[in-house]
Structure formats: structure tokens, C-alpha cells
Length: 196
Length: 252
Ligand SMILES: [Fe+3]
Image (cartoon, rainbow over all chains, first blue to last red; front, side, top):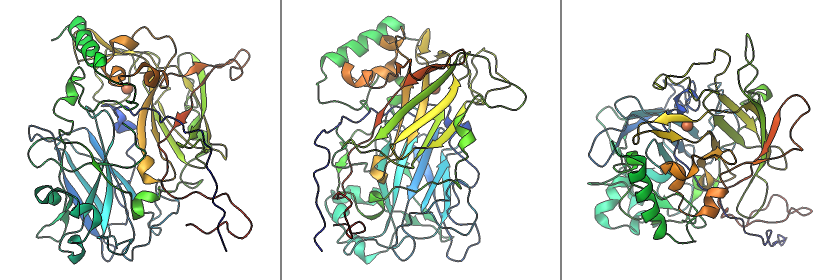
């Protein structure tokens, strides 16, 4: 059957400007178990953690990260239950405010690849006081053959690719630091239609 | 500490060199001092969204209680301040309503004080106000919050720096690429031209879109004043189809 292609409303609206999250989101946005996409101790559970650093290499104590991910078989969950987690539903979304040392930590499972020819990754958004608009990035799983042929990674200068790949720590956890500026600056993404 | 005049001079200089295509804030905007070490120096890398980026998280009635949309409902008493209702619609860049999606707000109390432990402003806390709200948008993308008008508050960006009154908004679209956080301002605030956070949006027309308008239709007799503010997210990437018989579940 031929799907009916429509012309969306021809009126293209101008996106509302973003603004910084500011210093005082801490009492409003983080919530209990927001960073636990699966309960700790779940078989296959892994910690995705790291530090958010500024241009002087100093940890940013007032940043917040969100991740969006597929499940281990590459399915993208679209189910409710992220804000009041009952421990049984995997929603594929989490939120974590950094601690005073700029550190965040999610408890989750490793995502599978969602597209043929793409390597599996966590989609990440970064918010912070001093950051005037949110930033998008990706945290790829390390040690994947598919990293080689990945569309996004192969479009980057080789020396910057590594900023998007998490590293495997001795305890099995995944480490992904976010460098907002300067040496080893993380690659941040703009998507078509984002405007400027 | 810099004077307001020095900060305003820097803002004017940057605005003179900006162009009408700019609808989003500059990330590198030195008059907002905290941005100096926190903005990327490299251009954002243009990428096509894939997989999870094309699907926003889903929130539902198990996540949000309808009472969370009324910030004046507090145990023990009512908050002090000018009672208001803020209504509007969340639309995507093609003018389509964003349905059933999470909207989160947070704000200072009427005296300009947050309950956040690091807020050191010498203004009273209000025992009957936390300043946090949530709701899900309706089928037409509409949201509605009942609250009190927040006060302006001082901050340490420069000497005698004051933020115009604002409500912080956090929004999701139908794609993860549409995720955004912003601030809603109140009409006619004399602090607008002085504020480096608002002025990081270099175009007047784009700043105007961050300001709610008074809506007498929303105001209620002897009860509250109404404000209207619509929010437009960025455009989506999935090919969009008119739902039609039998083809509703197909996505090209
Ligand atoms: Fe604020």
C-alpha cells in the first residue's frame, strides 16, 4: 500500500530560543532513581559514568546529563514510566545531575545498534549553568568493530573521534567524560533543522 | 566586578555584529561570564539523527499527576504573590502540536528566592511555595500551569546584576533532537536590556518570542491573571504522513 505523503503545514515556524538551565534546577529536575534506567544488580547492568569539565579542566559542579538509548537488542523503547520507575519497565531514558565534583553516573544496560552499519551509542544531552543552550553528543560503546564504518564517526577528524567513544574501566563500567571546551573538546552535534 | 555599563557595552558590540538568521542564543557570549569556559570552541558537527535520536522518551499518566500543574496547591496554605495562570501550546517546527509530552517548570517565589540550597539571596522563603510543576500536553499541544508571579533576583555576574522575572521551562518533542530548556519572561520588564542571559539571543524578534503576553481571556474574575506563551520546538526529521485508512502505522 502506498503511504499517503502529505505536505506538512507549509508554515515553517521559527523555533523558540533555548536558554541556560541556570544554577537552580537541582530542586526541580533531578528525581529519585532518575539515573537508574535499570535497578542496580540487574543482570547485564553497567554503569555509564564520567566527569563534566570546563575549558580550564575544572569539573563543572552544576551540569545535568540526559541519556536516550536502545535496549540490548537495538529496540528503542517508547513506553512511559521514566519518572516513577517501577523497576520492571525499561524506558531507555534517564537523567542525572552531577555531584559537586562534576561527576555523573547512570545505571543501565548496553544499547544494541539500531541501524545496520551503525555502531551502538547512547544519545546524550548536556545542560549546565553557563551553557546557554543544551548540547547533543553521543557516547559510543568501546571495542566495537562497527565503530570503523560508523557514519558519524567516519565523518570526523581522526583525532576527535575518540571524544565520542566511552572507555572500559577495570571494573567493567563505561567511562565517558564531557569536555565542554579546550583540549580534547567533546564533539557536539547539530541536527538538520536546528537553525542557529 | 564589572559595572552594568561595561556589560551593556559588550552586549551592544556583539549585537551590532549579529544577523537576522540567528534564532538561538550564542553559546559564546562573554557578557554572561559563566559561559566563558563552558562553551565549545569548535563548530557543532552536523549529523543526521539516527535510531534513538529520532524517538523522544514517552511520559504518561503514570509519570505525572494532574495536580502537579498547580504550583499554588501547597499543604498548609497558599503562597504569597500575584496568582497567575500560564497557558500555551507546544508546537514543532512544522506547526504540529506536540501531544501528550512532558513539560516541566521551575521558578523563584514572589520575592525572587528559590528553595534551592545554594540560593543565597536575602529574600524570604515562602513556606507554601516550592516553585516546581509538571504537566503533559493535551492533544492540541496545550499546557497550563497555575502559579504565582516570580520576583526578579540578584546574581553575581556583575555589579548590581538582576535577572528579569522568569519561569524555567523544560520541553520534549516527538524526537530526542527536539529536547530543549528555556526561560519564559514577563511582558514589559525593564530588566530585559540589562540581562546578559536574555541578550545572548542576539535578535530582538527571537528575544520577543521568549516573552509571554497578557491574555484577558485566561484571567479569571477575582481570582487570577492570565498569560499566554507558545513554544516552538525544532522541526522533526521523520517523513510525516497524514494518517489514512490502513496506512496509519506505516512509516516511510
Ligand atoms: Fe532562574
